[in-house]
Image (cartoon, rainbow, N blue to C red; front, side, top):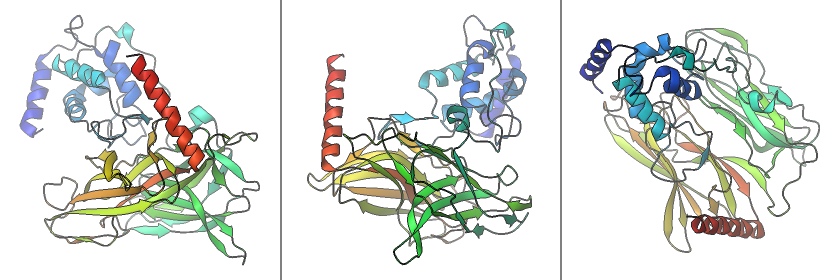
Length: 434
């Protein structure tokens, strides 16, 4: 929406009385406050990353025109996942329901009335910055691993800190959930933080032994699907790759922390579904140059020699990236199917899109995952810092990346066939009840 339209909306609101229309239109007190609480206040509150606070009518009312624009265009809440293609059954889906969008738009168009203050809900409590997001549901982590300290300067270029530390895990356990927590002081300068396990081989050398966690700005923690096991190996090390981008505030002795929640000690993988879960990074292209004022598409391919279940998908691009899709090619039939797509990529938000139980894509052995990324290095891309530059693949913030994190549950043929049969029965029951 252009500036003239925004000014017009402000003018319209200025002419409308704040208490008018309570009988015919939604009001802040009765409907809108609850939508704001459930979908906006997690970021829009003092001390959080939202640029303005939305904890009261007085704070929300001046921003009503901007709220209308961002909600109508589905830019807020920030959740880059297409609503009309691919798997739509997602856990922790930030997208507003259409009825909530309609309510917000009708409220703003009616003059953003307060309504009856007695209908306001009680304030909602949220975890402060620097505390575990998953703790509200799972309690404090069972195990914590910290990176070694690093001095983050106030100014400078991209920096990487890659220490290796003992995990402190003395007994192999199945992971229930994991969350990476930047420090409160360096929350704005911690671009991403990846971690992986290291175990000793037969020669005593420390070798990679599976991903532990991945954090990028805007991401919450990850929960393991029911019945699956992500193993935390005993007597292991943890290797870190922490990318800092100075934001004007120096932080001495900064540390990034990983919290692990374990399954109960008597947890056993479901015998009917032999499952082991691994986190993979799929490349969508890693050797390319985007010309000045140009556009580009890249692709990457991956397959497994056994059946798998895809439990989550987290795309990752930088400032010239505008979209990514994940599809699967079935060699036996020649069919291609889009599983997930994000056509409104924003590097400021990185979500792990977790599929609901029973709706995770099931891939037979030999199926090929196709990861496609699109880039726009023109002035039409509002997030492009300089369309006159050549942009290549690389680690810096101003370089480009093209990969996606996927959580994969490994299956045998019996488990795969049973999952397919269970879903067919579910779909038949659903059809019978229509």
